[in-house]
Image (cartoon, rainbow, N blue to C red; front, side, top):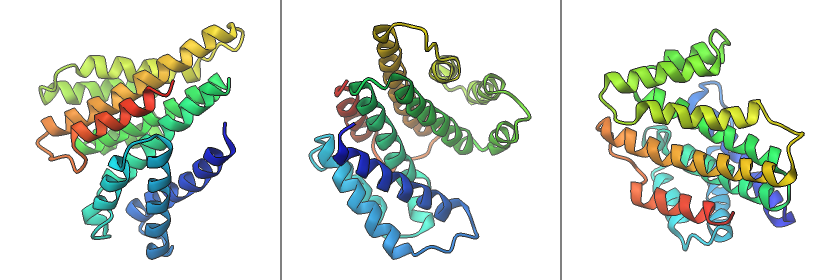
Length: 228
């Protein structure tokens, strides 16, 4: 992984974690102004790195103004977390670290599943999984059931693809050839990008107006995947 990106990845990952706590941890006591400034700097750097032509940066800036929890919702977190996680995964593939790449893709789909479940109004399903009361496949089956009850098309396929990416990480075959490991990593990244794209569509079908348009998110995802 290039040194420049490794620094960006470390710094922006730190800031995204801070954003998560700012949004969802009532005990967070950080500096909001510094966090906003650092996140926008990271978004601009990531935009440049993936050659997004300002599309990622401008969407992040729009979500950061005005700066408050109600305006951001989960959208700023998801935009930056998904884009950074998938970009990091592509960099890891390019440097021969296939397993590490798959783990980043796995993190993206897990986060995506949480966002969809929350938007559907069933965060208790997430809480059961996070408390280790159910395994991952049971968790995603419950998500799919909620989506099917809401007449969301391809709910089962959404679940299957999430599970496939998760399985690449949890059942990694380190004895496979380097070529096969690379193919597995590429498959996991492309599948994770599809899950993110599909999640935006699902939320739109819920009746929620996406703060980052499906078109913009799709372009950003394709720019990242095309780096493979």
